[in-house]
Image 1 (tube, rainbow, N blue to C red):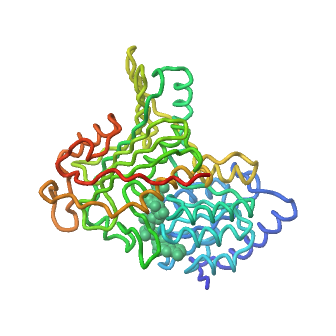
Image 2 (image 1 turned 90 degrees about the vertical axis):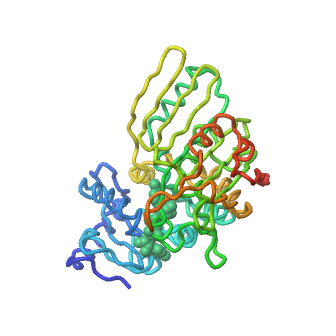
Image 3 (image 1 turned 60 degrees about the horizontal axis):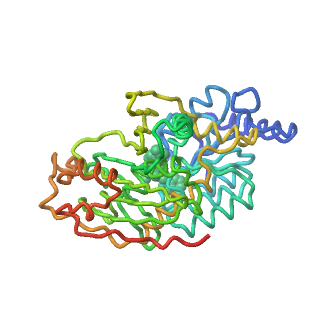
Length: 420
Ligand SMILES: NC(=O)c1ccc[n+]([C@@H]2O[C@H](COP(=O)([O-])OP(=O)(O)OC[C@H]3O[C@@H](n4cnc5c(N)ncnc54)[C@H](O)[C@@H]3O)[C@@H](O)[C@H]2O)c1
């Protein structure tokens, strides 16, 4: 049942009615520039990464482009955390039953809730913004694709790096042959996450909960953007664009899923992509995707939209702008603008997720090779020699065991890519 946020309940229904009538009578779609009716938005998940969406929606609401009309979360928002225009519900089903004429539903909830919440949102007349990773299995992905096709609505996946204008610059430099022939791509992620990170939510670091898939591994959640961005640069968007996926998964933390892994992908076009990722580094470095060319290399620091190009003629560095994925989804609803990070285009990523989901349990790294820095919940694991190992893995398209690292006692596991 909805409960009021703040003291503006009467205004909610007034705005709700007038916006609904205006949209129906004029057949109008929301205008992202704010000159048309404000798009009616609902958000599921207001804490955690939901706070990022609240900030972004606050910006868009101030510009007149959107109105946050309702939020759903079993943990109510703190007073003042959502605008007075928003009604508060404890669940998305209640919200959808009580709220008409939504333009966009944003789902920023734990991974294992994505599939049912996304399907519920697609049963309305709204577009869907679904946080990454889209869902926790390929079967759920296929179900969601079917539901999206049947609904005719757009589904944007929250890989916000795919809105970076650097991707256009990368496509242009490849077409111009600036770094010669593209011989391979690597994605390198070395972050630090402490014990508290895995205590923040009951799903953190889980492969499943009571038989429900979660797949919260380093490549599928914290550093998922590295994988998705590398795939996009390689031109691998859909399931059909991937020929093979191999995984080699390890963990230093006391968790079920992996925290230090190599994922080796070959695209249908024959390009090798190697993702070498850890959250057990000495210090956090912003992750990067490297394009290895026959005549140079380009390094894309995707969280910063920064592109560094190195060739025989020197080194250049440029920082680019970025399109906001919520605005892009509004433009899609309004004017049919193509989505920057569509559900279908997350198919290649979903094959990687499925490979991780179905891989054997990650191998525990011998504690002799793991140093714990800090105390208690702030302590974080550092795997011996991990920085060099990640660099070599990316450069040589090799897994940790293939590099002969003393702690890498596992072996690459091939995922049988389903034929399309
Ligand atoms: N795009 C990014 O850069 C980025 C960054 C971080 C997290 N994420 C994604 O955002 C999502 C949420 O991650 P998080 O770390 O904020 O998770 P979280 O565990 O902190 O949960 C987020 C919120 O969802 C609420 N919630 C749980 N079940 C719900 C339900 N059934 N209906 C409505 N609300 C519900 C929780 O109470 C919480 O307020 C995940 O998919 C995660 O991968 C994306």
